[in-house]
Amino acid sequence: MHTKFRALSLSHKTAPVQIRELISLDEGSIHSILLKLKEFFSLGDALILSTCNRTEVYYSHELDLSTEIIKLVGLEKGLTDVVDYLDYFVVHNEDRKAITHLFRVSMGLEAQVVGDIQISNQVKRAYQTAADLDMAGPFLHRLMHTIFFTNKRIVQETAFRDGAASLSYATIELIDSLTSNIYQPRILLIGVGEIGEDVAKNMVHLPEAKVKITNRTQSKAEEIAGAMGFEVVPFEDCQKAMKEADVIVCSIMKNEPFITKELVKQFDIQSYKLLIDLSVPRSIETSVEDVPGVVLYNVDNIRSKASEVLEKRLSAVPQVEQIISESIEDFYNWKKEMMVSPTINKLKQSLEQIRQEELGRFLKKVDQKEFDLIDKITKSMMQKILKVPVVQLRAACKRDEAEEMIEIISDIFDLEKIKIEK
Image (cartoon, rainbow, N blue to C red; front, side):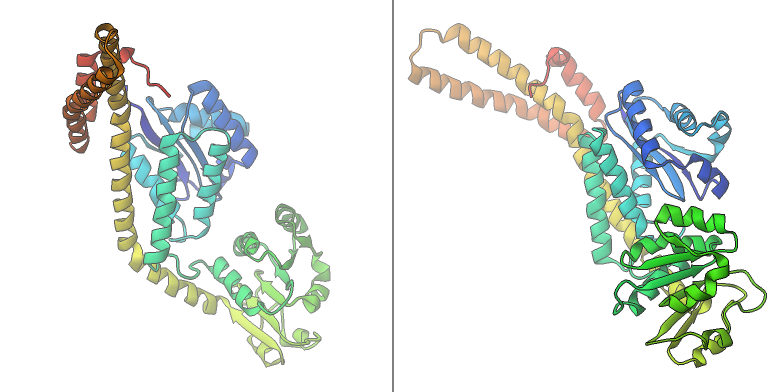
């Protein structure tokens, strides 16, 4: 039975956030599952990718192990009813489909925000984990390095990765550009609803910033701040924290403005203070810009910028898909060569063994000069004999008939008994 590269995918396209949260795997769980796959199924190629938007397992095996893998995930997560979630997973059991899916995910074509730059680093970390646990063989190594090279081509040859295409990441880019001259800018994030939480998670792209979080429900702020290493400010101390901050990001649900012009006038602004309103309806009075040193951006300003970038990215998708197609074709050419390589090596060893045995039988009494000449002649003959089956094998690869040709040659030369020398 032929080993196939397979994929098992649960993502934002197939499952709501509640399910994705249940199935999501941390680093320790990924390690544990990879080691179980190695122990239980002798997998040599396996990779697990788990982000807020997807949990996916890629592996090479003769059999479809999707149900067994989902059960392992359930065991790791303490889910006794994990089989109830089977319908949320998409299974790719065909080589090309699984490989194409991994390419598309890695390039950001399958991301919630098309072209998301974070996914590339997440895939690299998943690969590094697999390699560290000796779960990446020659096939997976070659595949991942082809993916990394493809990503580089896309960055260099297309506009697919230009700019920020999500509201939260566009906010981070804005903060980064407007605080570039401030050492360790002080940022206060008010409100950690869906948008606020996403902004908080993207703050990792501002490693020098001193981030504080405040929220009406303090436990929610503590949960997010604890994971990110940020400071929590009690909501009643919010005004004091606003006075100290260089940047205020407000994402709070309120029917009337939370930050008013009168409030901002009380701040002692030394140079400038950046206010970003991500609330709908707006939570910062537009008139705050009348206060000297205040710079205000709202959700429409930022979303407009993100939408322009997204349109640019979407127009680059056909070019990206063409580059991916070329890379997959190159990878398949290598894969076909790899498939026939063991048979070619076995055939060489089989013929060399016959040659050595015959030299040993008939040339016991010849001198060194005669021996060297006969050795050279027989080597040349062997190379010419090898040429025909090798050419036929490589031609069969191009016709996708390598398996049949391997079987024929193996039977003719009885290659099953030959072990490849390392």
